[in-house]
Image (cartoon, rainbow, N blue to C red):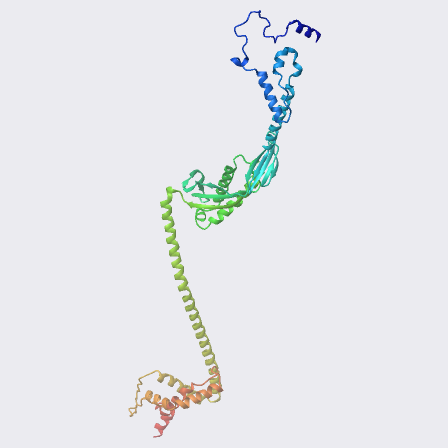
Amino acid sequence: MRVSSLMKRLGIKLSLNDPRWGKDDKPQANEGKKPGDGGPPDMEQLWRDFNQRLNGLFGQKRPPNNNNNDNNSGGDGGGNRPDISGGVRATAGAIGAVVALIWLASGSFIVQEGQTGVVYTFGKVSHTTGSGFNWRWPYPFQSDETVKVSQMRMVEIGYRGNIKNKQARESLMLTDDENIIDIQFAVQFKLKDPVAWLMNNRDEEDTVRQVAETSIREIVGKNKMDFVLYEGRDKVAFETQQLMQQILDRYASGVLVSSVTLQAVQPPEQVQIAFDDAVKAGQDRERQKNEGQAYANEVIPKAHGYASRLMQEAEGYRSMVVENATGNASRFKQVLVEYQKAPGVTRDRMYLDTMQQIFSSASKVMVDAKSGSNLLYLPLDKLIAQAAATDAQAAAARAAAQAAANPPAASATLPSDLMPSVEVNRQRDPRSREALRDRESR
């Protein structure tokens, strides 16, 4: 310090800050001009002003302006200058604090209703969050992704947007009977595990589409074409949904299949006309089959009724024949008993019964008289009818009495209604034994 003060007293300046150092005592052309008169600005002064203003913002007092003293004092006024390093540290700290706040704020995120947030720590799933405001460590430590878990998603197989926009590569399938069929269907699904949905699938919707196509090809390949086209649509859709769920669970894809809807099931366009003809022929066959079945339903009951009636009539006829045979046998036994008691009377009775049966069925009677005697012809049929008419009431009473006294099977005599006519026949028959005896006695 003593050397510097001495040199200052002597006017000797060895500092490089002396604008006259290294120059002679002659005045220069640019001498006496200020820095602002056309030269570059003083960067040191600008930095000093910036620090003073920044310190004023943070509540620090601004140091006094000693620019003139500094200029006049030369290199010996360093003790009056502001602390530049302290201002730089304060500025850097403020900027760092602001940057840190912004960095920490970047870790906040909002999860909407019906969504689930998935938080990754260095690329690995650490936890999931529910709906609302959430925070995680900012990048590069953690990151987040939101997944819509309540949204019903849909993939289309065999078409895109409209069933007319067909995708033949997806829709054409082979059935069990080696026929080609064209199927367009849609699959609706939602997520049951968002972590598995994000981590185990490279292309999520394409995975579901491929699983759906594989499943329905397997189900269709096990069934006939007519079954898939007509009565088996619901069953095919249900079995496809079950098989899809099994495959997706085996893949751990986090998908829940809600429904499988068959939009269109038809043969290929190239064979549509021939298929329509075959369908029409099948419909005609079914119609004729139904008509034949209706006719059979109408005729078969009638035939069964007619057969039942014939069987009943045959059964009645059999019973009648058996009863008649039984009655005849019983009558023959009774006649045999009576014949053993009185053979002559029994023969006469049998003769009269036989003649009664013969004359009752004959309308004309021829009498061959070899003796040449005059024979009076009597109209026996008229006489028999007249006698039967006059004795109808008496015959009915006797028949009722005989029916009550003797069973029909044990009857050994002629019916009661024929008895009067037999008696008249016996009395008036000229060929009877009584008539012959009377004729001989005369």
